[in-house]
Every structure is written in structure tokens, then in C-alpha cells.
Length: 423
Ligand code: AMP
Ligand code: GLY
Image: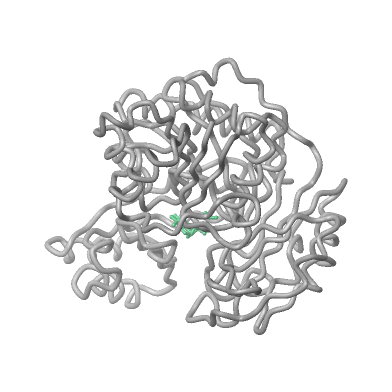
């Protein structure tokens, strides 16, 4: 079977690496991919927001399975588009239609879904430009810190957590009146603040049955000790030490099962990964958000732990046959350390030559913002590489990743030196 993966991050490099190990894979394509996927698959330089271009490639390359990595094509209706094309009706697709993708595409929609299906989450109210005054009144009735979320997709930047009331009021009007997050902030969800530790849970859903994949923890802040700006993710570990069997059972009963039931009951058209961001508050799980895809940098430590043939797993998911799958999970500790460009997560530099990539012994290097330029591999994004290791303990796994990230050189390379400090 020929496979196409949409996306260009480390998540997509992991998908590629995993599918490449399957004997069922004939030709493997990634669009647009990076210098890492280019080594093990064929990168296709196409514009992934042009659905007609994707259609052409699906036909020319005789694709049997399409995996959509990032959320934007899903929210913009790539799956709906494919389902409307008679020529593409045989293609198996991993990813929800717009109706399901709204769980990530609209915070208001997802909060409404959670309340409707009695899934534990923070209290909230939603406001728009016409109800700004009500929003300001509402802020006066709730205790700080204030959590303001742009309703629409904002690449992880649409959430503000503010300590004082005047600032919260000002930011609410910045979002609703002054278009701080563009159209994504036309509606704003104001949420109660939850204090706890976060983990990322992953579910694979075939439209009827689901299986739970290993969970992970990502390190979101740029600075040591979890300080500084939020990033896409500076590293990750799996399994999650503070999510023991009993807590995972609670997540299944109180969150995953009602989520699946709700998706079926509300007739959301959904096949693919469900990423549930969870916060543990005094031993109880609450949902922070849904994403309709795998996480990055979590995929780098979750997928390597899955022993099953990954292509077969994807095909069974797309064919509604997950009830026949028994997942086999490796128990070792996995750790991922991410190297980023100078300046990230604000404006960063690109085009720096990367060397030292060949020193890959005990770790796997997954590429994100990299590309080939003549003989060289150069930086092409904020997050550049993920160095993933496994060992009997997190200490050892992290040690290996730190040993192997050191010899990788590019101007302005930065990585957090303290991952695992909290374990
Ligand atoms: P989100 O995009 O909804 O995942 O929010 C981004 C980050 O903001 C989360 O990963 C949390 O760290 C934080 N956050 C979001 N909602 C809340 C909340 N209700 N209480 C505390 N922290 C939150
Ligand atoms: N690791 C968070 C995300 O993928 O959105």
C-alpha cells in the first residue's frame, strides 16, 4: 500500500519512521516533509492548503492511506473534501471531518460538548464583541488568575492567564474589539483556573471502538524550571510517573468513555487520534482541551512505545476494525529533548547549517524545522530536532538524549538542560 503523510514536523517524521518499519508499506510520501523524512520517504513539495493539489497527488501516487498530521487541514475540511470526491472514495483516511475537528477548532464548541456530556472541566462563559460588557461583569465575579481563550485556532498562542483584574478586562477587549488574535478571537472563552499537573492522553478511535495509547507529559515553557514563554514543546516523557494505573482508570471512566459516547451521540464524523489535555487536580482529572491529532513533542515518545505494526493499526482504524486490536506497549522509559533555534518562540533565525547529525548511537533523531540545501541540512523552523532515547529509568533516558544532543551543532542552538527536574 502507498501511504501519504501530511505535515512537516517531528510528529510526521515519527509517523514516517514507524510506517517504514511495516512490510505492508510500498511507497511512502510526505507533504511537505523535512530533511529527516526526506531520508526515509519521498517529500512532495506541494501546498497542503490547496485541496485540489492534494487530490492530484492522491491519484497520481495511487495512495491507499492518508494520515493528516496537523489540525489546520482538518479544521479547514480536508476530510470532508476527500469524502465528496468520487475518485477518492477508496482512500483510507486518518483524521476527522469538520464536525469532529471542531473539538479543537472552537473552544466554545468543545466546552459546550464537555458540559453536555458531563465531562469534568473548568467552569466557563463565552463572550463576543456585542457581549463585552457582560464579559467584564463576569470577570468581576470570579477569582484570579483569569483564563482567557480565543475561540478559534491560534497555534497554541491563544490562551492568556492573567493575575490581575484590570489586565484581564483590558485583554478581553483587546481580543474582542481590537482583534488581538484576528478572527480566532471573535469569541472568547473565559474559564475558571485549575491548579494541578498536566498530562497528555491519546486515544485512537475508529468511529465505533477506541483504544487508549500511552500517555505523555510535555515541557511547554522555554526556560529551565518551567519558566518563560510557552512554546510548542521543549521535550517530553512517557510513561507519565504521576499517572498510575488507578488514575488512568479514572481518566478512562470519567473522561474517555463519555467523550467517545458524546462523539457518537452527537454524530460527529470522527476517525483518528483524539488528544486529550488533562490536568490532575487533587487526584481528579479535568479536561483542559481536546486536540484532533497527535501531539508534538508527545508523538516522539508515544509511538516508539507501540510494538504493533503501525500501518496495520492505521488501516484497522480507518476500516472500523479497532475492536480486533490488542495493543502491545513497551514499558521502558522514553525521553525526548528538543533543540530549537535562537530566538524561539519569538522571532527566530533560519538557514543555519546543522552538523553532527551522524552521531546517532543510542538515540533517535527526529527532524522538525530542517531542510536540505545543496549538500547541507539547514534549520528551517523554531523547533529543529527531537532527540529521543529509551532506558530503564527516566534519569538514564534523559542522560542519553543529553549526551547525543551535545555534538549536534548549529548556530544559536538552544535546549532545556533540566528536563525531568520535576519527576
Ligand atoms: P489550551 O490551549 O487550552 O491547552 O491552553 C494552553 C495552556 O494553558 C494549557 O496547557 C494549560 O497549561 C493552561 N490552561 C488552559 N486552561 C487552563 C485552566 N482552566 N486552568 C489552568 N491552566 C489552564
Ligand atoms: N504538545 C502540544 C500540542 O501538540 O499541541
